[in-house]
Length: 350
Image 1: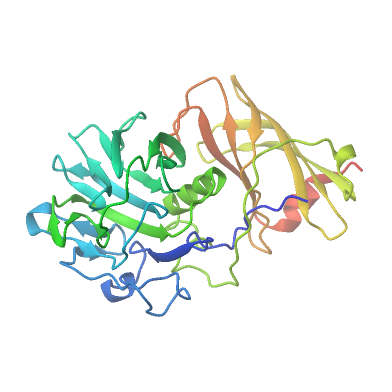
Image 2: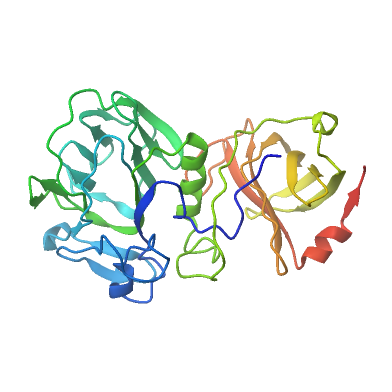
């Protein structure tokens, strides 16, 4: 049975995560500087130091190039490390660094282009962002990749010999121990991993980082639960008849409005084993006036009490922009006031 990420899994609780910060929604600057990977609350390794940017619980760290702001993470990466940062407010001035140490960085090249570097550097192929989640996945020689909002942007990084590494800075470049090329932008969240996440995990991480200030289950400063990680598998549809442990098949008839106020009609089918574990999801949906096609499922969220939500990505022919800037991919949710309400609208067909 394929398991899905649970709604109560905080965004930074991933294999290989050694440090993360979520200044957005943090109660104060001191708390924002704590490494939340340790246990979600207390100080641990890698407390962010440096010439600290201004802090706002609504926008996170507010870096200013004119004030030479930067944060020293204290982490010395290598070509197997991965770094992701959520930012807003554009990137300026030209040649400023979102994060960086020598030979490992993401840079605003000329105001319209990102430059990724992991030993060798290359320019982005996707459109430029003024806000979003950008990062690098390191995986040894020539296997590094650059990502924008969960989508693969560039590959082939790590082509060369490893240099002398220095600690990783946020909001500037660590130029052999000296901060340089300071940034003007806001940073809401950042994470460093010492192991390469899979493309499916990158997509999940980028999505949860983008919404960590909205969804209390994903936020470091939201509802406290017992958190864990389950890796999301690639979407592969299987007929319920081919699943050995299927006990029931369920169907939800959909006639509602998504978060973008588009009317959706269709049905959602899924299977369940005797333990109540969900698997084999498939939906056919249609937006009023435009067929959107089959859902590529990334997650299913079943909250205990409160709101029950199903979420996924719809691929269609009509360009649709979501909060993470992905054309042809629309994040949607269908909610009810309670789990019982959802069950009353759902029928078991097997």
